[in-house]
Image 1 (cartoon, one colour):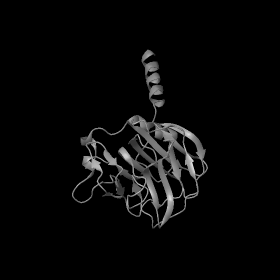
Image 2 (cartoon, helix red, strand yellow):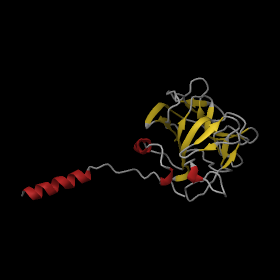
Image 3 (cartoon, one colour):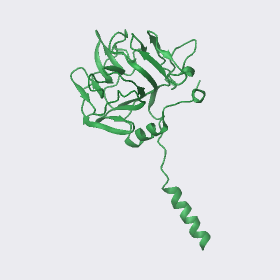
Image 4 (cartoon, rainbow, N blue to C red):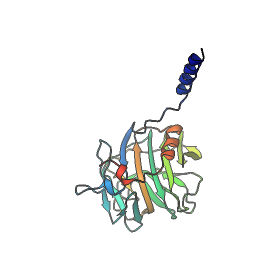
Length: 233
């Protein structure tokens, strides 16, 4: 009888164990931005099967586990990709002490503005500009400490997250389609000459779906990839 009760108890404990999120589902772009994410063919490898590899503008410095941008025309050109208007998520680990710097954009001085995910001027909080207006979070991330920042675009339920926690109020951007505007990491325009990121960046992800709170929490708890040998070739 005791063995039977123990078996039942163990079964119940297994049933209540948290299920890990599948953070590869809908992952259509993933750039580790480290030494193992580059080779002679392309400079910044997309580790997903979509192979949207990036090429550099300027001279970002690739380190063992992250890339440093100096604000002097540094950026990563991803080409004419990521033409999404709703239901997508962008995540990155950043470390900066500078405001008004870009994380991930589809914005061009001649082709128009689709979305501009950045650290806002003066306030140093997460922000996105959709060509008509800006939407901002509340936590200052310009403290020169690593932060996991996430932007989820989901209609009127769009939301910023910092270090696994929802930051600021929900917002409702109006994002237009643009098949002629390049996706850029680290700068406002594809020429890499405005709003350049200053600091360190790693583990940039693009999802073609809305990430849930538990997934964002797990993404943060996983931590910034620190072992370059653990990354795919």
